[in-house]
Length: 125
Image (cartoon, rainbow, N blue to C red; front, side, top):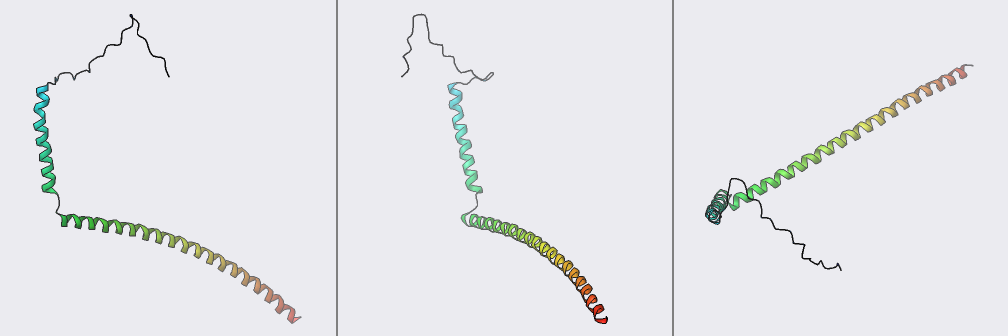
């Protein structure tokens, strides 16, 4: 697909440079090998500590049961709070609608009183 690159006598491939070392700390093969037992010891201590401090199967089941219960309780509280907020909002809207109807019906009664007065005054004539 691409043409092959041809080396001429003048062109030389770029020199490969070594990876820079950390300043002030030389790593030798002996130093690297000496750290392996230390690392293995740390790993063994860590795993032993996990095994010793881990809860028993019964305690782990109890902790899981408690976690699930608290999660359900939290969800139930969120649901009930939302339900009550919606109920209060609906109640306020219904109360406003009833008050509006009552104020309109008061106007109708006033209009009815005016009409009855007119009928009463016409009867006296």
